[in-house]
Length: 268
Image (cartoon, rainbow, N blue to C red; front, top):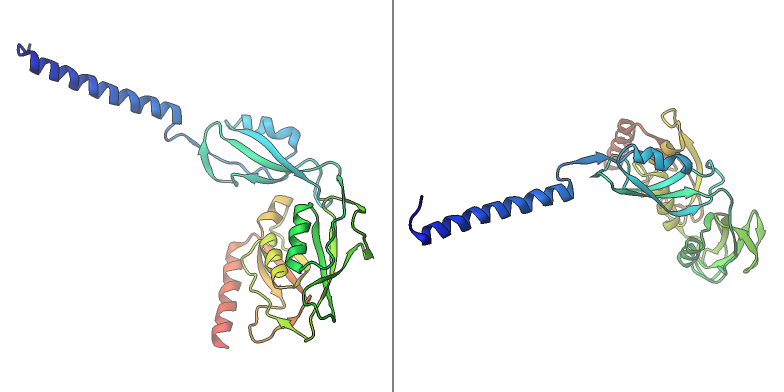
């Protein structure tokens, strides 16, 4: 035993300090479940009545943060999720989902005429509406909305319309016959490709999926492996032209086609 009180006190303080530090790290690890993670499952296409049980079995919970209406998808299923599938998260993590509503809600049609194309897109998004096709006619105001159409007919501001409906826009093409470059869409998801086409004042044409696409969830994750017209910097197209897309889950096919396109551009 140490007879010197000072040394004995110092040793005691050291032991206590080591114990306190160990205890702190021990409880922090317990609280954060250090090193214990789970893989987020894919929820796309699962019915809302099944999600809670499905996630509880995987030590996770769910919270529905929004609902939209898409008449091309089954009603009451998950359309979007956060975190994305295959993400590593702590046990007990809440997964936030957006589901497909059972019935569309009705909203008043906003005023788009006299807005620019970009302003009109922002308004459509804020109202829960979607852009349909864009057509161009001669007018001094380039890319100004001249008409707003629903199913081929004029729709007046304030008219009731189902949320999620597609609105077609008639735009001015200015005084010159302007043309634009078709963007390179290879490797993009459908939603990313649509955004790029809209930004370039182009329309999406046909959407064609190969045999790798079996479920709605597959179509969300699919990537563009072919487009027509192709990305050709020296051959612009008219405003409002349509671009057809082919999509797949085969990443090798996407990479190979992207490589071939880049080689063609280099050779040109």
